[in-house]
Length: 71
Image (cartoon, rainbow, N blue to C red):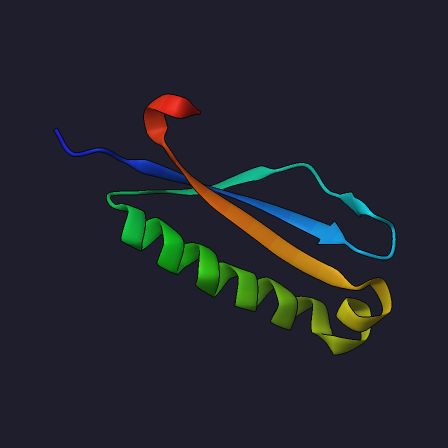
């Protein structure tokens, strides 16, 4: 059986030194797929928030991939 990985993302603000709760953003069949999706979703989230909000609040997105049996 192939190991599956869960993508876990978190939106943070350096201005407020705080993060929103982590959320599960998808299940993937490989580490590569999870990491690639996390990278793309990070760019999409910043794009959707827009430069004004991202710059004003110094927003950043973090993600991690965890083996499904460790969640």
